[in-house]
Length: 454
Image 1: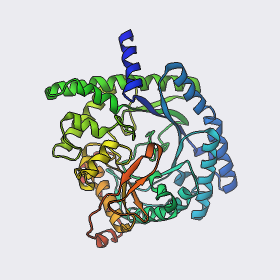
Image 2: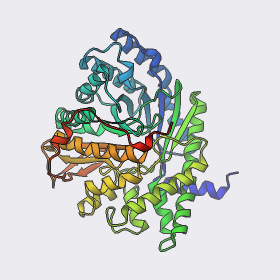
Image 3: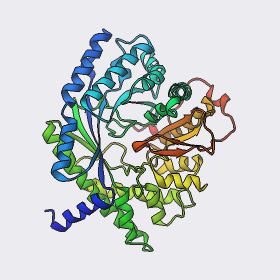
Image 4: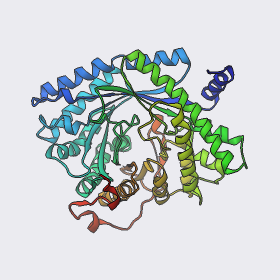
């Protein structure tokens, strides 16, 4: 039974503490669209997406109107296109036609983004998957709504270092092709280790082959709510701190569960999961870094940051998991630099470096996220950074991801403005020493010994 006080508390969270449902994401399987004829494949893809998702935005707006809960994004994710296009696509250019079809479908449905221009290559690349990867720069530079992801490693299979090397080059090419927009294409491209099948957040969302034909996944967010709650327990013990975060996460997740249930009912699509991730925005007061400061750090990046983030991440999960029937996706704290004003402040103060963000990845899902680096950063250096993050995910049996943006024409001391939820970011320095001889080895890094649990 929900009390009047709880209703008032939720209203206050929405009006004053930036509580929102970050996204309703409709996952759509395209497996039954596969055809060896490229034109038929594109027609099948467009028809299925628009038939399932034509009402998604309207339903989201109606839920906001009926319940007063802001729903920031309405999104679509699809089966990895590396699989769907394998029969019809013989060249990278063929995959680009699918990207444009996805973009047209997203525009016609009115959604913010569409994810799934993806390949899962943790143990090796098929010719079709390699063609998709090579098509990414052209696909992202010629579309507006399409997001891309590539899974390069997993705890069970190891890391495909050939794909890691290739992705360093692809990120550089994407930056160059979108340089007139400050290399914005790279903001729509993420690489993973242990990518989940049901992630509703972009740019990494795709509809995994383990999923049903169509599901609704919801991502909740409320860094501002958590921070406000913690202001009431300044100086209290860790026990009180943890209990406060857990109770707050429970309340936030209940809002997401309500939206997910309503969206599922109105769209007549099964409910998939709630993703508990704390996802910040550039808005003042909606920052994960601010939570870390409220816990007791001068800046995010100060000594104690990794411990504080580990505490926060764990308590959010413990509180949220009790408020939803199904929890999945990433369900961790996002720490994107450009999308979190507190993180930006920490970088500008000299408290936060790429190396510290890498360490923080050990206790959250996406540690190197939306990081702008100098445009002249070498492809092999980018691949080396990716390899480090993939190793963290592989060995620790968790999801890790990288979204680096080498901004063409800019260097350390400059800043870049992406706009909207993507925010703005200072250009961060990277380690100047080379790793070419390591990255240029062929093959893959084997799975760790603890992966053999069958």
